[in-house]
Structure formats: C-alpha cells, structure tokens
Length: 169
Image (cartoon, rainbow, N blue to C red; front, side):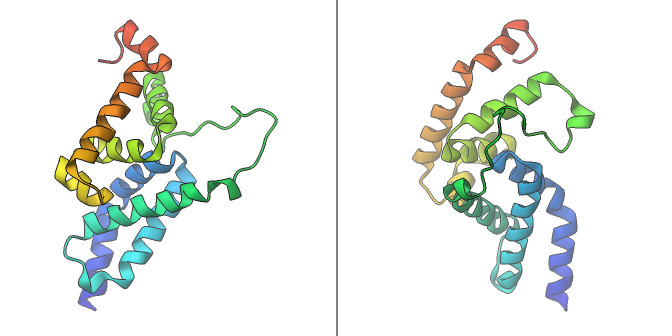
C-alpha cells in the first residue's frame, strides 16, 4: 500500500510538468496526455525498482514518443488544407502570445532527437549529463544535437521576424 500511495503522490505532484514536457515532444495536447498516461502506466509496473521516478518517467516519455513518431504515418489523416490544424499549447488561452506560437511551431519542425534534446536541456533546464541519461546517448551527442537545433531555430524565418521586432531575445 505504501508504494501505491507514493505513486499517487508522484502523479499528483508531477503530472502537470510531465504533460508540458510531453506536449513539447509530440506537439499535440491530446497526444501529450496520452503520452503521460502511457509513461505512468509503464512506470507503475516497475515502481518498486525505480530509484529516480521523474527521470525514469521522462525516459519512458522520450522513448515512447520516438516509437510513436516512427509509426506516425498510421495515424495521419489527410485534409484538403494542410494548415487547418495547428497545434495549440495547453496554456494558449492564457498566454496568447504570437511569438510563443511561432516558437512552438519552430520546435515542431526540428527533427525528433534535436527537439527532445532542446526540450530536456533548455525547457526542462536539465544538465547535459541528465539530458544524455534521459536520451540514452553521450554528453557530446546532447551538445551536438542542441547546437544543430539552435542553429536551425536561429535560421527559422518565423522566429527571425519576431526577433527583428525586438519581441524575442
């Protein structure tokens, strides 16, 4: 019973942060919730063995999002207007800032490994070694993926227009 209570406490305390990270990984609010639920379900079965639950669940989220990305073509639905559905942040009603939407869109255009590295390293404010552990790669890979991602973000035309206006530093 103590394990069940600890798990419940973890879910209550960390679900919102995990959902934000999941959204940044999959760029869809519904899929983000599904990703968190899937990760928490997988973590429940190993709960007694887990030493660092947050890192364990985040690692599950990254690997699950990767496997979903590999199978994404199965879930795609063609539409007449490819821009008819743009991903929205769970906090979009409150934030409502165009620059943030441009950033979400630009992050969504990054390759999955680069996006995961940027989300863990800069959005989640993880160290390089923590990010490497969560991604299952070396610190050098984290550095190179982040460097490549930041270069792409700097060259992104939608972000360049905003930074020229002085709204984004």
